[in-house]
Amino acid sequence: MNDELFESFAEAASERRPLSVSELNTSVRAVLESEFSAVWVEGEVVNFVAHSSGHWYFNLKDGKASVKCVCWKGTNVRIRYRPENGNVIRVRGKVTLWETAGSYQLQVESLEPAGEGALLAAFEQIRAKLGSEGLLDQALKRPLPFFPRKVGVVTARNGAAFHDIMSVLTRRARSVSIVFAPALVQGEGSADSIRRALEALNEFALTLAPSERIDVIIVGRGGGSAEDLWAFNDEMLARAIRASAIPVISAVGHEIDNTIADEIADLRAGTPSIAAEMVAAREEDLMFTFVAAEERCAELLGRRIEDAGSDSEGLKVRLVSAVLSRLNLVKLRFANVSSRVSPATLSARVSRSASAVDLLSRGLVTSTVGGLRARSETFSVLAAKLDAMSPLKVLNRGFSITEDSNGRILRDPSEVKKGDRLKILLEKGKLDAEVV
Image (tube, rainbow, N blue to C red):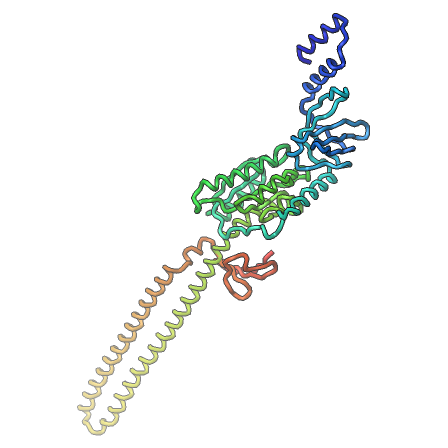
């Protein structure tokens, strides 16, 4: 009790002067509002009335007691959940006294559903409202950029979700930079905190050069109870996600959890780690593409070398055949004239013929080797040029290529649909995959 009230009561008691009803109620009201300025109360809603003035009037009961509640129009327009009779809710407000009737009441400043039944009812209520406005239509969802270079992250600063996202991105997508916007992800004010962080990332992106702007935003948190995740069912947060100029991945809780944020976001990830893997996979896809291109270039180069080697072997055979033909011709001529020459002349002719054949053989062999060497040097130069222009140099860093079942290289995720079989070419092998 404040000093002024205490003095007023003391004075009245000393003079035995009775208080008027108004004085009593005013004094009690002051005491109540001072001692119970911010309390949380949970109970079942009964006698709910949405007055034509816009004010809400209802009672909260717990089976043993009941308290009157009022939520003024200026307050309930900011509350995205409208309670109904039978709902179990949790309200925050101050205790005050309605002086005219002499009854105390709880002046509600915020409220939220409590219990699984109430949470489900509130979820369906918000979902139906957004759906009626077309905000959940699949046609509004945007695809993830093919090669995200800058990723925004909205989650708790010290939460497991931030650690998981950072771990995946730094390990699997080293070229991706991260812009972190911390936010509360649980409790009172968390929905507004997440919404402001999301809007802040959009505003920050506008200050950057087009080539440096944020490509995608991950919004989420780790697992928890339905009440822990309730911030991600907030209507205003859902509208902020849909209004975001940057595609949003919702990564809330675990695979089995489902929130309004999941339904309205451009993409839904079962966990924060999966969201990070979605982003990292694009860099890996690009690396696969380069690896496949490298393998194709290597295969083509190998074939060219094999073909060139076959030509060289053919040239060698032809040259050897020519040498043998010349030798056989010399032998034939020697046989024809051997009977017409003396032994001395024959010996001299044989010697000269042998020398001629030897010179001829050496010349042909030298020509063959020189030709082969020249061809080999030419191929080496061509191979070096091809290797210099090959994307293999980039592919060695982990890129890949993805082909459909017909061997056609994919460049856009819209070219495939769920269930399609894909072949992913890696630096050291191949993978068969399915679009899920």
